[in-house]
Image 1 (cartoon, rainbow, N blue to C red):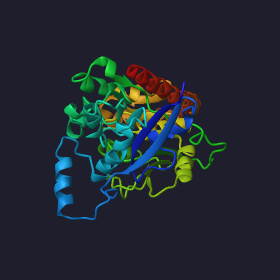
Image 2 (image 1 turned 30 degrees about the horizontal axis):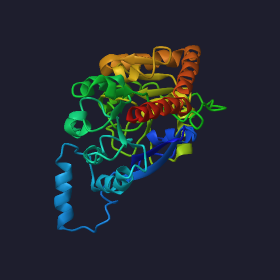
Image 3 (image 1 turned 45 degrees about the horizontal axis):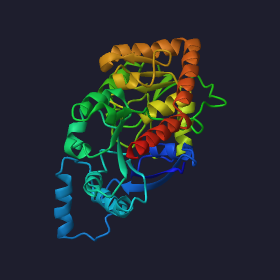
Image 4 (image 1 turned 135 degrees about the vertical axis):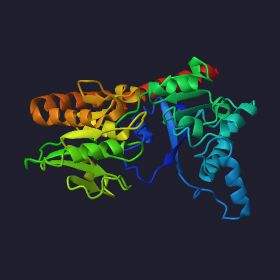
Length: 357
């Protein structure tokens, strides 16, 4: 059988490194099974080919008003560019890696062009509380398949799509790049690392950080370019504009991944941390529990600061347990390596193509 021809779009986030993001799956797809071409789409209007003019402003307001608030003129340009391939059946599947951003028009155009046999997939990443603001159910219904990265998203989509068109495939991690250190610092500092900004619970984190002020050998390393409310605290070390290797080094020299969340689905930082062999202190929500269990993480309901601090203390005081949890974390990351997740995507693409014939 010939490889499945997939054209995929992904949103180009400026803060993501070379080893982060859903596109990391692509090199692990078997060329004999899937022939995939990738198109990056700016998370802005910079890919739109026309210079700024009044028509652009009206068009921008129009496309933003269709129920997909994150849709940009760059997304529209990407859909227009893919239209010839769709109507001539030059591809088998069009996959919108970031369904909240791209896929507002092309699935509907394909459905109306009866000669097209192209199927469409949208993968969605945001939690149910965010989705109503960035997803239009009428637009999503035009997709042939919706895939999710957390079971917590399922009830939202099942409210307007049949079960056979919605599937959960967990997010993956580059477990070759993100890996435990061969050697660690022995300076007596206990390091808790937090990476990222989106939906982090900075209020709870500040309370925990302040509780550890008397223990000067406990440091909180925060990797983000945004303000957090932790500025000026003596036991906080902030890291901005770090490259991929530096980020990996920070994980590798940490003792605990500290990740209190307001909400989540899949989380790059969680996967990167466990791939580097870190035990986790995070929030007890369904999406986190889909990726880690009690052998890997201490999870606290509601981000109660005293309970979070106690979890860190237990890991601080028990190096053997910390080592066991770190080993379990690495094993879990290997199970979620993109090489394994890619096989699930090969099967998903094959199933969708079979539905066409």
